[in-house]
Image 1 (tube, rainbow, N blue to C red):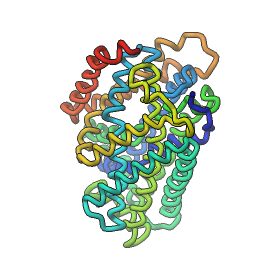
Image 2: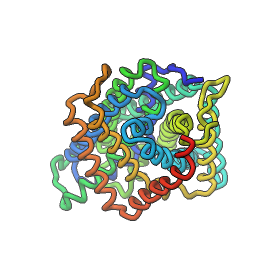
Image 3: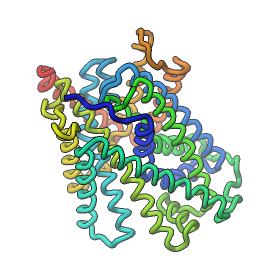
Image 4: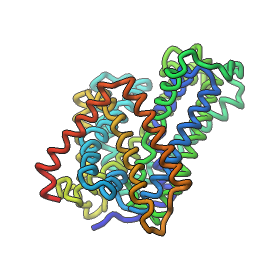
Amino acid sequence: MDLKRQFGLWTAVALIIGQVIAVGIFLTPAGMAKSVGSPFWLLVIWFFISLMTLSGALCYGELASRFPEAGGSYVYLREIYGKVAAFLYGWMVLLVLDPGLTAVFGVGLASYAGFLVELSPLGKQFLAISVVVAVGLINILGAKIGANFLKVLTILKVGTLLFIIIYGFLGGLGDWKNFQPFFAVPKDTFGAFAGGIVGAFFAFAGWWEVTRIAGEIENAEKNVPKALTLGVIGLTIIYILTSAVFIYLVPVANVTNDETFAAQAGIALFGNIGGIIFSVIVIISVLGTLFAYLMVSPRVYYAMANDGLFFKSFGELHLRFNTPHRATIIQVFLAVILILSGSFQQIISYFFFVVMLFIALTVAGLFRIHRKEFSGYKTFLYPVTPIFFIGVTLLGMAMIALKNPLQSFLGVGVVLLGIPVYYLIFNRKS
């Protein structure tokens, strides 16, 4: 039994926007604005990183067009570099990144729910586990059901952000003087831009994950490249406008930390109940991201199992619902363990560097296959597009490594531990 091609273009676009926009948009603009010191340079960084992201999306569009099957980066690494590279990527996302991020989203949602209803630490833990299990179950009951939930949540998320933008500007609730000085140059130029670029990197992270469900998208050869392009353009517009309205509402000089910035913006918009309303908005946003993540992530383990690089039973689909139910269950199970242990935030910080390394490696693979005959979509402005993306990604990785050298290299070390596992266990099976 194979996965059905049941998702259209707009489901794929909703998945990109729904997954990428989580709590970050309410937190990163403050840190970025304080780092660079002026609205102009904040705008420049958003445009620069969005151009880099769009370049990467165009490259991934060609890869998805060439290999329109479930698994995303795992499949591209397998086809270009072989099974060892693909296994190492799958080893990382299966054991650490995917369950870790699932735990982060669950606990983040429960934390904001604590602003609405008083919850004990145990109550927050129980709520986080319940939400993760419920979302996982909905995705098991049918990909269409999960996709419909996701589309509704994405519409609510984007609609809410657009309301904040329009109401904030047209309601005259802020001050245009907050944009002064517009062209100020920071004293520590390198440190300022490093902080701003890393913040923007985090804000756009995850745009590539839609390719994990390429095997379920109708006419994936054309629709995945379109979805990636439209999704990144949509994210850029939303991020720039949201950052602008937050600065309009709250002077950057008055911000002590990122969380305070969001709360101050909420009070400026809605008065004393602004914190409560913003908590509801963030809960909707994080829930949409959790739905998207639990929809796409299990497709990697499903693809690995079908290649003999994971236990065979995880490559089987549910007889009734036609979903990779065992692959979803293992992600939920590992996330629940991490929530109970409370040790996932530190784990996630170790792996952003290595994730970007895998994404850069995947895009670099275009140089090995681009000339091969093929009638689908080919990367716009090749080879400038992949060179620009890889160059900026390596710059971002260098900044992350300089900021957190121990975490970055420990993450690489954990991934390399997958090499003996591959040769001792899965090489013979595959």
